[in-house]
Length: 86
Image (cartoon, rainbow, N blue to C red; front, side):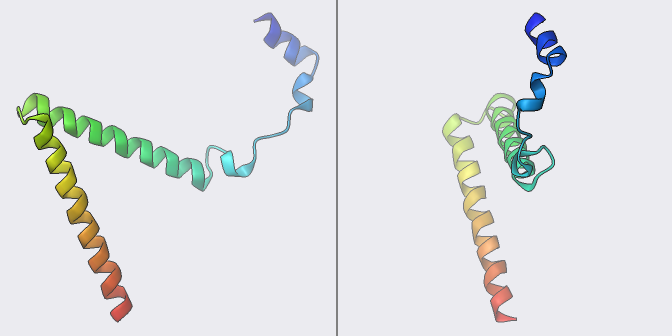
């Protein structure tokens, strides 16, 4: 607590460079990191729901997420392939 008070009263904060705009809380980079973290938490919650509430074995949950990943990749590939035809 004393170190923080001295930091403010001695104006040591003036010698610190501000955070780059790339690493600011509202930057694209940090927003993307936040979205990835939310996605990972959603996947973790989904895995817990499948294994604990529905009684699916762990390997079954992995299979569900693996198939979902493959299916989503196929859909995205189809959409991007159709985009080049138009």
